[in-house]
Amino acid sequence: MSKIKGQVKWFNESKGFGFITPSNGSKDVFVHFSSIQGNGFKTLSEGQNVEFEIQDGQKEPSTWAGLLTLVVLEVVLGIDNLIFVAILSEKLPPNQRDKARLIGLGFALIMRLGLLSLISWVVTLTSPIINNRFFVLSVRDLILLIGGLFLLFKATIELHERLENEDHENTENKNYASFWAVVIQIVILDAVFSLDAIITAVGIVNQLLIMMIAVILAAIFMLLASK
Image (tube, rainbow, N blue to C red; front, top):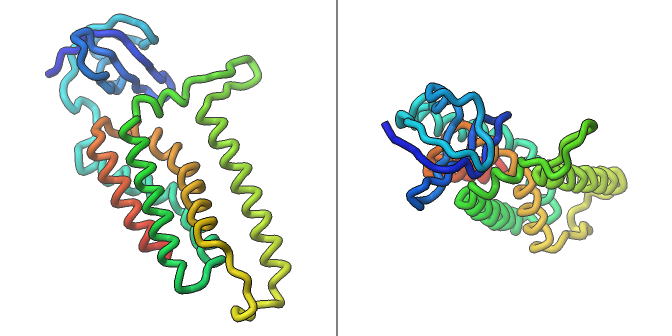
């Protein structure tokens, strides 16, 4: 049983989790709202002073269940990413494709681990920056919107190129793309796909190590599956 006293730094009511800044000056504490409902709180708001007791692991998945859930989640959310990685790598000479996939997904893994280490900042991206009766818009929504437009643009270009070159399949005369241009595109694509998966992961477990292990395992699977 742990006793927490401090001020609510950030709380997402729809997802049911947030961060508390302890009054003793220690680092922010991540909490699931379900674990503090027994203390008489119906909701939490930013700046609210709170004091409650929370049982370690209360109403949270076990370590192994949480890890398995996150790995499956990362893999499922990464399937569309794999499709684009495969398409992009085909633009390179056969002897460079594996190297591009390895470097691109490697950089993407480092990016995901970096975002996880800054998770207290990442989750605030879901806070609305525009909120009216017509729609609600957050930084996360903007990133996903821009990423979606980028994917739509790339898909259109790829389809156009394939239709144009369907009668010219002789690889000896094929013009290959720049190696680093393909790697950069792989990293950008993975960054777009990563954001939503990481924010969702925070709502499943509150252990940073478990999140990082799940991301690493999913990255290994994606690397093997992309071949």
